Amino acid sequence: MKKSTLLLLCMTMAFGALATFPAKAQIEFNHLGIGMSYWNRSYNGYDERAFLGNEENDGSFTKGSLMPTLSVELGLAGGLALDTRLALWMAKFEGQSQIDEGPILSLENKQLILPISLGLVYNFDDLVEDKLNASIGAGANRYYIKNKVERVASEGDDSIETNTFEGGSFGLHFKAGLEYVLSSTLGLALEGRYNMGSYNQLYASEVGQAPQDYKVDVKGIELGIYLTYNFSEWY
Image (cartoon, rainbow, N blue to C red; front, side, top):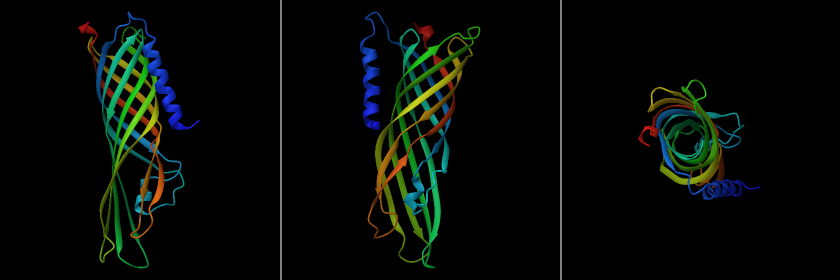
């Protein structure tokens, strides 16, 4: 089954579940979460260094970076909730090359990824003396991706203008978390995710070269810590 078909099926099942809720089910604003996570991306093939001319990828490369996040959870019925999240991941890929004893080329790719997530979670509240909550969930990711590639030569005409490539793709995520209750409104949460997906980009890593279609993974383990504000006291 193609990844796009699987994603469409998951989203259809999620919205189908919402449509079958009893009329008495009341959607509530559960909590707002602000935090920081570390997303360590991993690759099976090409990574973003390929845009700098390094195409000898063995799949063992990883790239991690801190990522600020903002999340909102809406209670649906019982422990079931709708989870949405916005995050920002940035990283820099660098390298150098020299062709036929010519000028040294300084290579750099500044990347920005904006993952927007939507999914369903199930909460297990009051596990330990009203102080510990847990949750599991899964859903879809929409990735906005921007690559800004620069190549500067130490001499000669081998420098190129900065090229910016923007696009998007879809993926999936699975998550699990623990929340320690600090007060009636505040909590401290630890969360782990596994993000999945990939994107395609046409790029020529050398002047005069025909563009090549690169498929790059957008996946990897993510661990984060969040401060949550609980709105249950408002109802």
